[in-house]
Amino acid sequence: MRRERTRRRVLDAAFILMGHERGLAVRIEEICAEAGISRGTFYNYFTSLDQVFDALSFDLSHDFNSAVLATMARMEDMAARTDAAMRYYLERARSNPQWGWAMVHISATGPLFGAETFASALATVEEGIARGEFVIEDARVGRDMILGTALAAMITQLREGADADQPQKVARLILRALGVPDDRVTDVVSRPLPPPTLTE
Image (cartoon, rainbow, N blue to C red):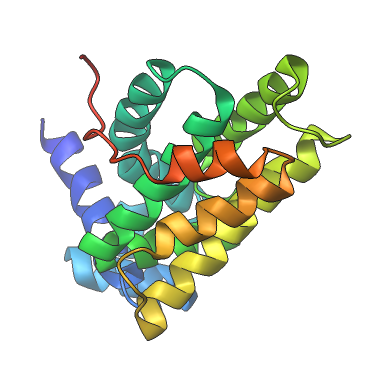
């Protein structure tokens, strides 16, 4: 229990330091000071900053991503799932800017929005192509377009503010770029989203 509490303090300290606009350049010394531990204690738990970032990425996104994926799985097609994923992430960053900035900075050091989200986006695009919903040649290009646009939109939202319907505007453009017909895009993005939950 004591070991887990100290590890938790390190991750909480990293989150505090990364959860604002200038939080990208965090150093081990700053994490140690914020957590109230020595550098030697830090290395009892993590071998590097990258390892902290990987652990924090999982910590910040796993439960949320699991709920998002479970909710998306109940949607009928890949266009609806793609729309939902983008809107869920952008709306969460709007409601919790500290979480949003931490996800932005984590994305600068590893897979965009963490390994789970990165893999899920690729799988969604691949299935969309296989079903004939998305008209693009390379699923990786689709993944990068979705995640890269969501990241840029999140930064704009956090830094400059944005209209309440910004997530729908972003999702609409991405779905059109993936080749989804306009009438289907309009239908999908106009629907209210259910809260992301693990069960119905």
